[in-house]
Image (cartoon, rainbow, N blue to C red; front, side, top):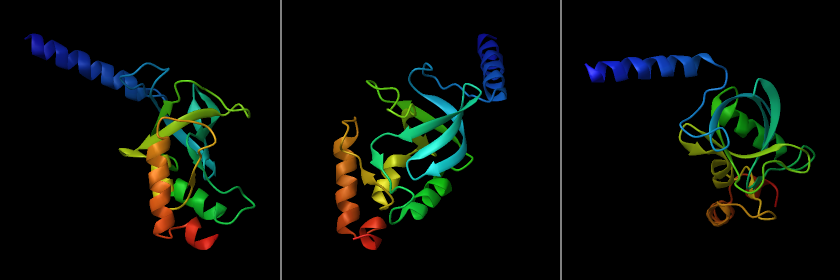
Length: 158
């Protein structure tokens, strides 16, 4: 009987979470949450629905080509293929919430993948080592491999 009550409680909780536009994860709002991608700005910036408002998010640890640079449209298109109009997990940086342009700084996870890492691995973005972050060494290794394999921007822009 007790198991049935837990099942009903869990079902009600699940229904109440999925009915809202902002689906909460098991973590607090200050750690990891789920958000709807509204649009792709460029290869390292997206707009998500955040607290019922559009919010710019800069992906931590990557640097994609800017609009005037070689491979910028390919980078933005690849990001769109990976997360366009999907619900994603935003994982914050522990020591910094926003950049100088007031964009949220977040790692973006979707379908079990670190999107920043995927973009670096495939040659659509560089490791952004200017600012320290938790995945810096991992991203450096991904960039080195993409360079060695002459992928994406490493093939087209050098």
